[in-house]
Image 1 (tube, rainbow, N blue to C red):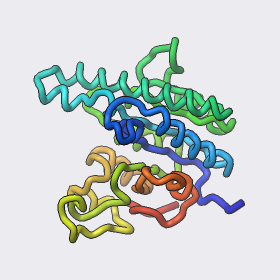
Image 2 (cartoon, one colour; image 1 turned 90 degrees about the vertical axis):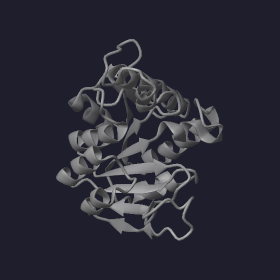
Image 3 (cartoon, rainbow, N blue to C red; image 1 turned 60 degrees about the vertical axis):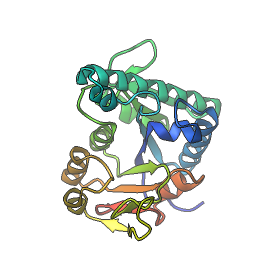
Length: 241
């Protein structure tokens, strides 16, 4: 068995990644595939925490742009992330992978409240921890949640699984055939160029806490494991510990 580069990772999944080609809702086959890849990571003794978005069900900013109160729209988006977290937990536990959903908004009937020390203890015991409901605050994205939780639990890297792209480009490769892919970037370059890695709040938080980000294509099976093992894949932002 090859040696893993990282001991503890945060896997950031967009809500859209759980929808698959259907584009909306939760695709059980896709969730099962992601759960299988997480199980493989655990078999290499890598501690895994997951932050999942909710864009496959509801996107707060979209609701706000249509006249809805922004805070209300964002809270609805947080609830969507919990639905995704529960779907992923169900798939993991069907594969005999112990997992816990921790919610930043208290809902004890379906998830534990987020408690930093408890989350770390779960990871140390080999459980996968899935963080739902974002930070529990409106106006903050799940990218920022990933950066915040990574700092709190002392994760060594954030693995950013993206659909339909294999890394970070200087322009949209779907629109510009000459778009150039970056293998490595510094945080400040991402901020100055406005590159589509994370939002600026999340990127700044990673920069301040020296948390590297690996952006890769989640559409290909085994890529999550490759990224967790530290293989050269996609685009790496920031220095690796």
